[in-house]
Amino acid sequence: MRKSGLVLLLALTLLLPFQPAQAKGLYIRDWIGVPVRVAPGDGAREIGQASSNDLVEVLQVKPEWALVRTPAGRVGWLRTRYLTDKMPKSLLIEQLGLKVNQQTDLINRLNEDNKQLQKENREQKYQISVLTHGVDKAKREVENIKSASSTYLELKAQHDKLKEGAAERDQRLRQLEDENRSLKTSQRVQFVLLGGMLVVFGFVIGVMLQSLRLRPKKPGFRL
Image (tube, rainbow, N blue to C red; front, side):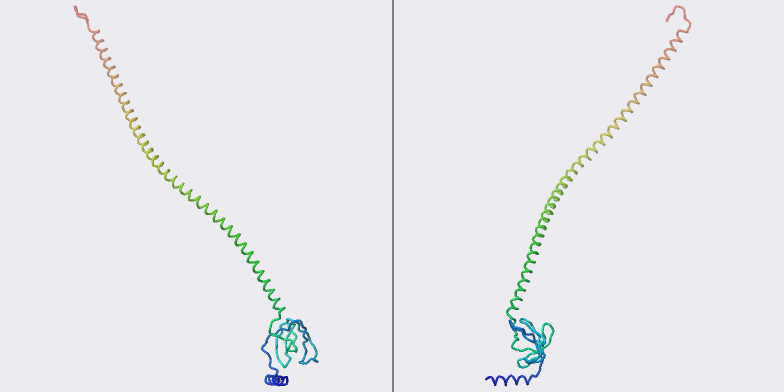
């Protein structure tokens, strides 16, 4: 059984001699340190080490040996039994731990963002409340202005009406004053004329009386 398996492996090796792998990455198995040699053989000189959880780049495969490039950049041979395509548990746990930490950091950042958003939301609600109060106050002031405007218009109409009536009364008063002055002037003229006439009449009477006194007296007649 072992011989047939070696024959099959040898046949596969002959069919694909020194065929390089397509940059396949494999892991070093857990809890070991693997020597990397210059040639595929246990007696070949060791040029470095590949440690557990290292991801090495497989460049070429031979029976029981693989040409790899280590994370440190060294290229050499190591046994294929130390390689696995499964991620080591310790590395998987480490990566899961990193993901958990990243998720935790993300959750913390989201919580901080949520707190900030809640704070901003409270501030916005307060500002909205203040603005709403201001709008209500402005509405009341507008209503007051409208009411005051209506009252003002009514008062102005009454004032204009009273002013118009006062103007009419002033005009009538001036007319009465003019008529009064005309009457007074007419009366004064009449008084002057009457006085003049009385003076003339008195003067005429005096002249007549004087002329009568100066006439010679006739006998048997006395005035």
